[in-house]
Length: 449
Image (cartoon, helix red, strand yellow):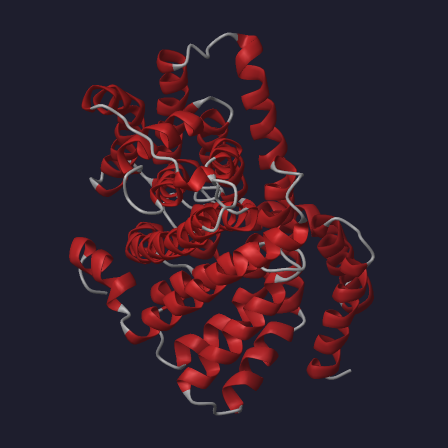
């Protein structure tokens, strides 16, 4: 059987097994072990556990459960609601200020939690009811939270970037720094759209009221005194301390990424103990339980994805596919477009973790051959995978929103995220035209590669 035929069979079997409804980790494991049984030496089956262990025995991967613990500590406390309330108090006078407050809250929370679903859940549970109470349309309220939540895999510390660093053998510190510029770009685009959309909805509400219709809450004004605003600042201060502490430890050279993750988790636990009085075993149990469940699920997917990639490599499927792409002699930008389109399609069905580990052996060699900076590509790929998190039919954040706001029809949620998909596409184009948006900060702080 030729490598091309074997690769096609591998892909078809993978799709069939995944479409059966089997959990992703088990589906990848079943496919990998089946091909080991039929196409690899029989002794290879005796080393499955050893192969998985060797692939996962990475000090970088150790940071994942620690970052998850940090995110769970923040997400299971009232921290998200407090952060949102403080930002809203200061931004309420700006047109669309409530929407902007949600975007900023999502960005800050994402920078601490590193998880998109956690950001959606923590900020959305407070933000969506408040936006709807003030007249924002359900679709817009859902869309801005779903899109803001995607910042969790772009802004450091990002679990997705940790995996990309492992798969591409790139510097995790550079990747974290490279995510800051594009993250700020997306925050600006989302906030700009929030202002535009809020002005539009305000104009409609005003026209209806002037025509004799009911007065929308959109037309009501809120007032906060300077004292009330100042009293809100301490609610943000712990987040800033946590964020600065982690960044200084990592980029100041005081700790490795894994040690930084441990420091972040410890600081988060101290924060919720001091600020929110969450320290008793009964209060900590949901945090630890959530961490264990999410870490186990994620590490199982990682382990099976790495085994899946190992089998692809052993059978020369990934090498042959990469060589086939190179032999097509596509121009570098056409090559990039084809690869990103493939990532978008995978994003309809797979989480970012699986996309990275399954596709890295195939797509990275041709991109490196074409002269692309793999740090820059990691950021572009992350933004594209963000699109997959809110893209129908199975965007994860869409279902998180449905879970915290079940009364919003799924159709409204989907239409609400569509403008943000367009803004993410704009961000990808800008990153292609101006790569320094991503590479400028790491080059400045860590030197040009």
